[in-house]
Amino acid sequence: MAGITWHYVLKFIITGDAGVGKSSLLIRLTDQRFLANPDPTLGVEFGSKLIKIPDEEKIVKLQCWDTAGTESFRSITRSYYRGAAGCLLVYDVTSRASFIHAQSWLDDVREHADPHLTCILIGNKVDLCEDEMEGSTSRRREVSADEAEKWAKKEGMLFLEASAKSGRNVESAFEQASRDILHKIKGGVFDDDRSPGVKLSKSNGGVALDHVSNKQGCCS
Image (cartoon, rainbow, N blue to C red; front, side, top):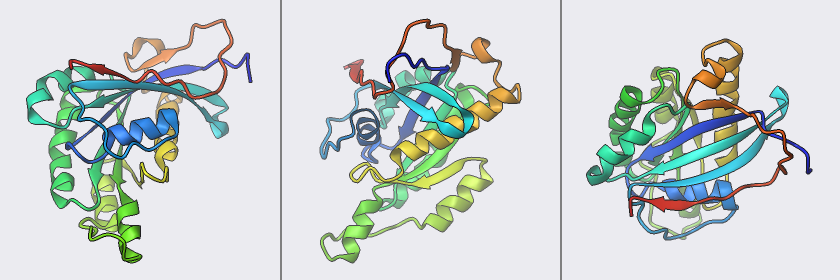
């Protein structure tokens, strides 16, 4: 599909507690693979991918910043929130603590990111609950989809449950958030090229519609 260019570059951040699978979600998006035991993120890591939003007839380039989930890096990761147009707020469905802490991460994002940012709440690791029903693991679900969805709705967020291991809903999460951002652009909420997290493509060259992986560590 050479010759296809992207229409917008959208800045995303991925945030939440350490160990909820943020890096695994990013690797699944960019590389279509599952890394069972990724090294802890030190500061931030970066990945990018082109995705097509068919109903909008748009191709967007996602620039995703995976932020560390430990308090010691919080001052560093906050600086990457600035100007973000989209956010994946991630918790682990088998860890109630990570869901409770999501409020603190959301407060941080809303304080430092673009005020019109689109946030999607992601309940990761649903595969562990499915495995449990088959008797292959002792991990139990601690947060119901209904409870998480109600909280997301109350806070004005989108919501999906996902699995970085199986790939379930990973790309869909980014597609839903990107579609919401595109709707905001249409409505004049984001001021196109004058919004830091939304850049109109100026490329005249062709870009193939394949995943682009530039994952790299920062502040390590």
